[in-house]
Length: 59
Length: 319
Length: 208
Image (cartoon, rainbow over the protein chains, first blue to last red):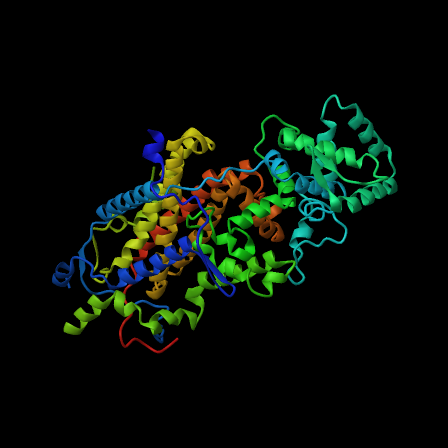
């Protein structure tokens, strides 16, 4: 039961894909993390923050 | 008394506008819950890596020639550890990594004394009980003058280029090598039995958590590095950022790792220290950003803030 | 006891200084300036929340000892929680750094807040390094034998031995968490004392 409950659903225990361009190299996993970070930053800047009407009333 | 000029990148205007209700404790509680749920999901879906540690036993079993060659280099003082210098050994002419006039490593001297011949080869062999031939060989080694030992080692080292491992034996066609062939063969057997792992770990004490000697010995060989190469963990493979398997690693080390790929860092004997020094300077620059004119103006000039505070500026326009 | 004698006591002076700078309504405010109206502001609290989960999962790992997670599926799961909360921690902290940079959040006497934040970033990297070499697996062996050269080169290797598993584990679970929690405390208190940095004034003064 322990293995069923606590084992991973997706097996990452194999060599990753690597992107190489001249001396620049990055693993697929790290590339995904960095892309997600930039996307999250941009989303945080652009998405509207709740409570706009309340803030207007308190100007 | 003149009023100090307002510097928009240093000073902040006084906020005379309104305040809105903001539940900080609720925000913190929600944040913890969200992070916890996200962590649970990621852990359930992806798990975590755990490639088992290699031992001297597993190394010498999988790659006996690599082990025996490394053992020889420990005995003849040519291994990486034997020629490292501070903090492990006093090697004449070894300056350690240098940065201009700074030789901090060698100035601080030896703090973790290692004698590779004694600690990695002779000491462990002496601990083996009931080995009359080996005992005789070790006595011959101890009693031989330095020049004789050097000659034995030179003869064996030259022949070891054709080293083979046949029928559980290290086979090197060396003549006039004294007890060296026996010492290397017996150390290899000791390694393959697991006894060398124990000897290096518990040498002086029952309880120990210090794997320095074992790790230095293992890293002197090629086996550990080969496994790392297979896993894309070596320096030239951007390994500092990577994790074993396909898990994400340490993306925050991107700049540190990048420096190792470019000159002058990538072919310098003091590359590690040079990279560290560069990173310290850049980090100091970022830390002291509030005091650096020009750099501290980039946020205002880039105008990204207009997106962050767009609601505020829109309200101001209406007023 | 005279009033002036009480006023001179260390206790009295500390209390007045502390609550003078940070009265309860400033420590736990129930309002924020109206310009605090962007999702970018949540990444500071997200970073702190991640630390809470990292330390919590670390405590569970400590309950059963450093070898537990190698042999127990439950332990392996808790190790996964610890790893992924660390990933979320660095993820949040970097976005928080980007946001604070583009706000020039050091303005208005907030330089120390910025500096403590950067020091926290550095200390987090050291904490992560000591954690990676405390895994007691192949990854620890490789990372410690490689990173030791940089530490040795700077002279640190004379007393900070990456190959000493016991030393590294104690730095990771005792010393670095204490330093981090202390620094986070200072960082958050500074934010509470100074308040969240106001927006740039449009048509502000001369260039720097």
